[in-house]
Length: 89
Image (tube, rainbow, N blue to C red):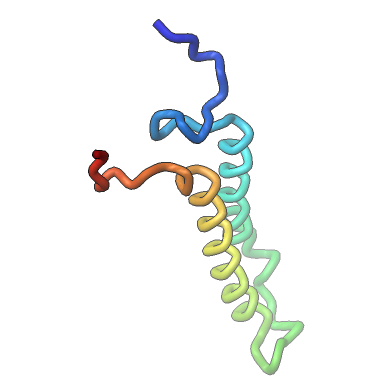
């Protein structure tokens, strides 16, 4: 039986990650969700941006933020893992 107290590294089995990366990833996922649920924050028309009411441009900005956060989480957790479809020789 191996020692499992060591933090996960790039050579670790898939699905094991460092605790700090997991915490940061959780915060990056919670941020857009909490922002979307905070309706009183963006339920208004002013200020406008290029004639677009605040509600709409805030929603567009939130969509971009969500994509960026999701991309960052993927890079933190899965970018260093090999694709499971590749054959090793």
